Length: 423
Ligand code: F0G
Image (cartoon, rainbow, N blue to C red):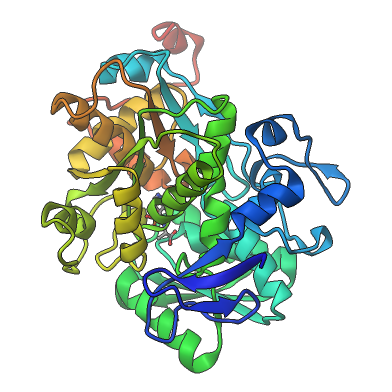
């Protein structure tokens, strides 16, 4: 056995090449690799990945395909559709760590906004679109709060597939919708919210045979696992105490959990970091389920300024619960005001990220204040999207004289004397 699809609870197995996204009973599917077999076949070890100078089609690669043996081992290199995604920076920032009250040597921000289309979605997209091609699909679709549609659009163009994206009217940041239009995908603006779009995509998959590239697609999550392996590699396999990131549709939560579970099974790490998943207060079904001991998920009508995570019915909920159990994880919420305050700090530190990403930093602040995260613990926060994704939020913030860190522009006459006043 190399790899197959396996339902997460009942363990029902399906061939890897079958086009399906849930088991017959509706359960989510994992891509299940034969880890022991792969370990033997490739001699996988920490040293293997640390020393490997991966080549893909003769080109040096890092990032997602550096870990091809644990992502999609059976696909020939020539079939891979890649834009060299991954290899993102692990920033340190004294400004942000001192604001948070963390030791600056132990606080890191991994910037997934530095991927080809500006978000972590590219890591999942390179794998899922490769698989779509492999399975001879003609059209690919997604529901999106913006970043998935931008990523799908770019990769569908590269792979010569027809792309159709569904986005909720009035709720997608201008940078993201611009990308979808510019890369040439068919963009359908739906009079509804993200959860309506997602329901339509699931139905379309069953009734219209359109291949979905949302995170319900298990191949997306295989790509997103590499965020974790890259962190481990960049930190020389030292496990941090905490990994903190925003939760919306809970794809990352699921993928990160699977990555660590596999790293542990392979013997690359001997302990698990703890997850802290951060949700916006107005879009926090996962937080509420966490608070009730995961007895039930109550879907909700979501509302937050961080439109990327404005989701009330997360499709990956069961996998995310599993991930939290594996990592002794916690879930926290932050208000839109806390997100904007954290964003102002992240932006002014010269790093910058979109609002949903800054929920990470707002969450760390809150968890330090509550004593959950200790000041001397090692914390890796994930910034999921680029600062330029949502320029409107930035302009609104800095033109509003009432906001604490507003840095509005000044209009001056075209005279050197006026300029002098500012120098
Ligand atoms: N951060 C950003 C910037 C996102 O775009 C998303 C999700 C998340 C966090 C949440 O990640 O869904 O894995 O929990 N964006 C999706 C989209 C829903 O359509 O672009 P998750």
